[in-house]
Amino acid sequence: MPRPIGWNKRDPELGKLKIEARFFGPALTFYRQSGRFEQWETFTPSEGDWDKLNELAENKFQRGKMQEKQMRIIRARGDKV
Image (cartoon, rainbow, N blue to C red; front, side, top):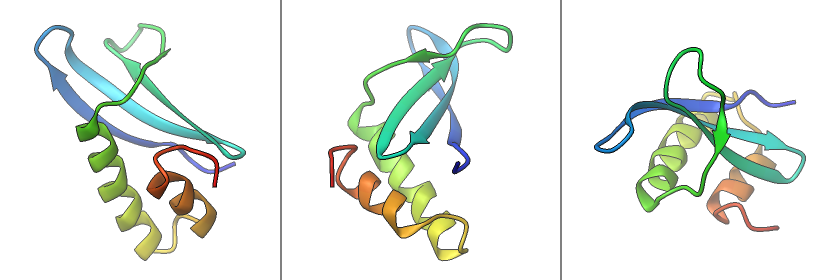
């Protein structure tokens, strides 16, 4: 199972958030956590989230830490390939 791709983001309403994009088979799901001991919750990503995920995934792919099939899912914006 591939490792999730994560980063931190600051939201004006929710404050500091941890964001993770997780793969489960062909499915890509975005999760966010507002505090260290808070529950992870799913959410619909913004255009900025997709751009950040694409940037981080491209770096991982070039270093050989991500497979081509996960890159195709990200480039298709989570739709079935």
